Image (tube, rainbow over all chains, first blue to last red; front, side):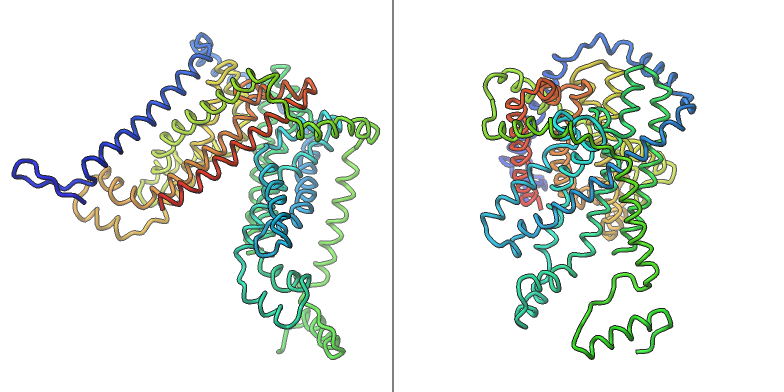
Length: 270
Length: 280
């Protein structure tokens, strides 16, 4: 911390004067970038729509309350579909991600080239949201739960793969060395030295992803990929906001239950 | 090694096998009945789930051509013929991302402070935790639908959506981080007679700042990915362009957009890793 003289009075400062100016300049540039972004957004916004935003909000909420409970019964089957999409999609994703993670981990990969390919697959799958995968798959396999499952699976590969290969890279090398020293083969080392070390992390990752997938599966119907989102989309297009509110309440309940289940399972595993 | 009844059967079996030179690992679930019940219920679930999905294989076979065309288009992405739309969409997405992250983080800081049990009174704590729970429960796309209905189509609805989602995410993690801070500096600064603001600024802020910066960058990344999605419901950004190109079966353009998204996400992940190393 520099000591700067103000006349006779010494003053403690956090930075040297030049450093301080550079710091301020950095903040100034950041602020200018933000203002520029905001200007672009406001150019593309029709501000007239905003004059009655409060009325719109009030009427929207007014039409959502009370929720239209009469459709609850007909929502049970789509809800079951949603849970299936999430669960089966997660399982399919895990089946693909599991070997991929071993290829992508630095300490278990058979070849650096394979590692690069595995990492590329993981990054691509992670960068693209399940909804975008669903949009593509609906045009390829047709609308319905099947497209939703594949979309969830494709998105889960990257997530599970990334967390799992990081877990594999963080294992203790000693058990691996000990097993190798007994003359164990590659497969035996993986099964008896690596797998027991990553198993709790693996279970945790899978349940965590399942929990996220339940949330994502509720919206896949917006692009036609099955589940409760289909009903929600139909209600929104009919401007039947009471029905939409019922769907929201059901989604909320499902999410709370799935979060509770995943927290329970993770606590039991770890 | 004396065990209680239900386990002893398993152990005796394993010991007998071991005498023959066969070693088996301990089963994950000790009680055989539970194991079988679990297996049976998994099997039952698979059957039920399979019955509920009805895959139209004829349609899938038809669509395979399109699937192959889509795969092929990744080898020859078309950046050029729709470059105007792609560029405009990306610019809008990036500006939305930055504006929403800045606004969201600025709003999340007071909420996060309020939601940390060790520095805020109980009523404030409950209010802030409620805000966090509200913002975290619903997917961005659902929030986007509501804000589009209120504010009309366009990037403003997207910015508000992303900022709202950012508040819940950042405030929760910030509050957890504040609750994990060391108590000694907090007590030391308080003992000097500092006001609440000085206390937060000089005792709490230095402890949570590196993580706050790291989380903000992570959220920037998430917001960009989400901005590619909320365009589907009319909240601006590259999502609208992508949606149009997919609906037109213009896969070469879709592939170009997806590749650009992947490259931007990868770059930002690389950069944020670099910045995080530098701040810590």
